[in-house]
Structure formats: structure tokens, C-alpha cells
Image (cartoon, rainbow, N blue to C red; front, side):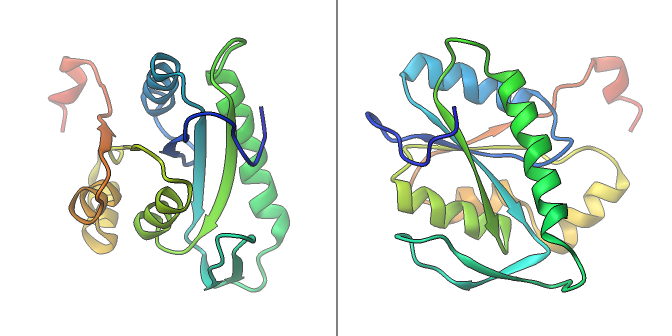
Length: 168
């Protein structure tokens, strides 16, 4: 389902990114079903920045890479919609996908406030040296949200077999 406004209880907000481990959506879908709540999936385009924020209208954004096409964002959102639709089988919760701009943690926080989401669901970063360096430089979305939100934040860990976990 791709509706901008939900009837009934406010939606659970889940942060999604391409290539994200599937446990994040699986956990969000299961929780939404148990709570009879819709899902608001949000992808934050870090290559854009917020120019104007008006909750009543769509946000205006400018790209940090003007040569980048809107087709790039469209292809990412098309891929994410496909992944979300696969994770939410028939009879699953109502859902929609919103694309935001700027810093992921702050953008998710603003959206949660705008829709009065009872909870924000995010995943842990992928393991590995490259992801650790990125987290060190950019900060952790989950950590920022848990320290700056008045609403609960569910951080879904990346599950890996025990024998694989010891390799790092």
C-alpha cells in the first residue's frame, strides 16, 4: 500500500536504506502487525540537504551534487519499494515510503515528530572496517536518536551466525 495518510493509529517509523539487512523490515513488519499500526518507511538521501521544511507540504531539497539526476533517487526508491513490498506479504500492515533529505538522524526525528510516530525503528550499521570509519566520521543514527528523541527507538541488531561473528 502506498498512501500518504493513514487512518487509525499513527504509523511506526522505520528507517530504510538500500542493501539494509532484512531483519530491520522483518522486525518492523512483525511489530506493526502485533500493534495493528501502519508502517511509514523513510529513506534519507544524504547527498541532498534540506532547503525548506514545511510539514504541510513536501520538503524542498537541493542536491550536493547538481549533476546527479532525479532518476538516481527514483531508482533507489523503486528498489526500496520492491524490497518493502516483498517484506510485507498480503494481509500485512499498510505502508508508505517517504524520501527525505539531509542528516539521517535529524530527518527521521523531524518526520517522527510530524506524524506523531509512537516509535522509530532503525538498524545497526553493517560490520567491517569501512562501516566503522563511516560511523566514526558521520556518527551513529541509532545513537543520535536514542539521545535526542522523546519517543522510543528500537535498534535492530545485525544478526550473524556465531562462527561468522568471530571472524572480525
